[in-house]
Length: 268
Ligand SMILES: [Ca+2]
Ligand SMILES: [Ca+2]
Image (tube, rainbow, N blue to C red; front, top):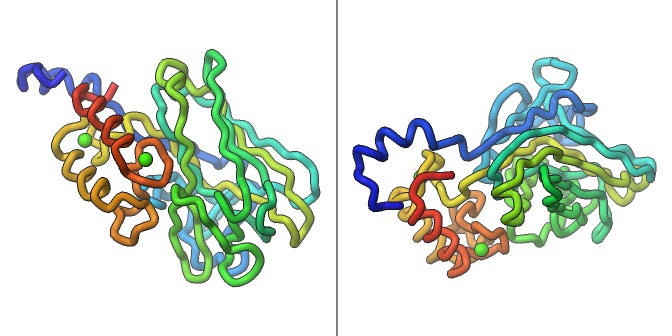
C-alpha cells in the first residue's frame, strides 16, 4: 500500500519488482525467412529486440543466418498444424504477438493463439482476416484490419501487426505453462497462411513506464490516453498500452484497473 515509508520501499523494490515484459524466443521452431517475402527486404532483421506497437519483441534469425528475419509459417495445405512452446510465466495479464499472413481472404479463419495455465486457466485469440490479421504486403490480397487493439508498424510496403490477448484473472495465480500457435493454412495463394514473428508476455500492465511500480509517473502517461479515448486516434500513444482491458478504448473501465494497481504501488 502507498502508506509504507519511502525508506522501506527503497529496500523492498529491488527484491519485489520484476520485469514487466518477458520475450519468447521463437528460434527453435522458425521455418521461414520474412526477408525473402514480397517486399520483405524492408523488414528489420532478426537477432535483436525491437519495439513493435509499443511492445518489445525478440526477433529471431532464420537458420542463424545474418540478414534474415525468422518466423514460424503455417503451411498452405489445408492441414491443421500446431506449434507449441513449454513456458513457465507467472502473473501474466497480457500476451502480445506479431502475426500476419501470406495471402489472405477477408473473413477467413487462419488459426489461433492459445495460452494454458498450470491449473486449467485458458485463453485464446482467433486469427481472422480483416479483424486481427491480414496479408503482410500492402497492395494485394487482404489488407483490411478493423480490430482497434491491433497496432501496425510499417516497413516500406510491408507491415507487422501486433495483436494483444488480455488474460482472465485466473492467470494471476496460475503460471502459463504452454503457448500454442496453430491453424489451417488454407490453399496456396488463397485464404491465407498465418506466420508468427514475435511473442511477449506482460505482467503489471498499469506500469506504463515499465519500472516495476505503478505511481505518478505512470499516471501522467495514462491521463492523455484517457483523454484521447480511442486507440485508433492518431493522437494516441503508440500501441495504446493504457487500454488495460484491450477493448479498443481507454475509459473508466481502464481507470478502475489502473487505480487498483496504483494503490498497490509495487508490481506483484
Ligand atoms: Ca511505473
Ligand atoms: Ca479499455
